[in-house]
Length: 101
Image (cartoon, rainbow, N blue to C red; front, side, top):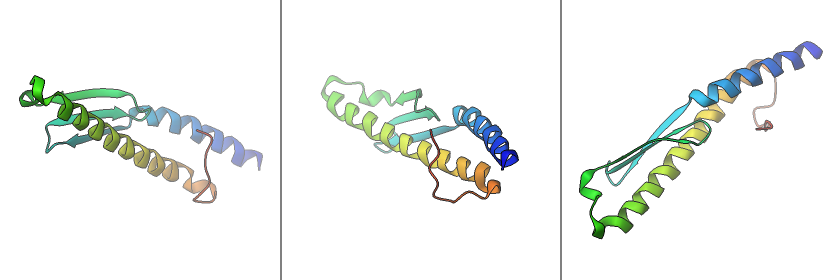
């Protein structure tokens, strides 16, 4: 039991390191706005098509940025879940077990 707990602790540390390296990219408006997030949900990149940089397009641009961010965040969460299952699968833990982070 102690061996399994130590193994789980090591894998959790490894998982937390790998989460930082995860990146998710999402676009909205047919590619007019592209957002890149890392595994911690930090914004790592934002690309805006120059055609959206007009005063009359400001509200649309705001909506597109929010939509791309929301999609990228959902992708990050899926990638983290997959990575967690991959690393923890060998421990014999229940598949639906929630981890503390």
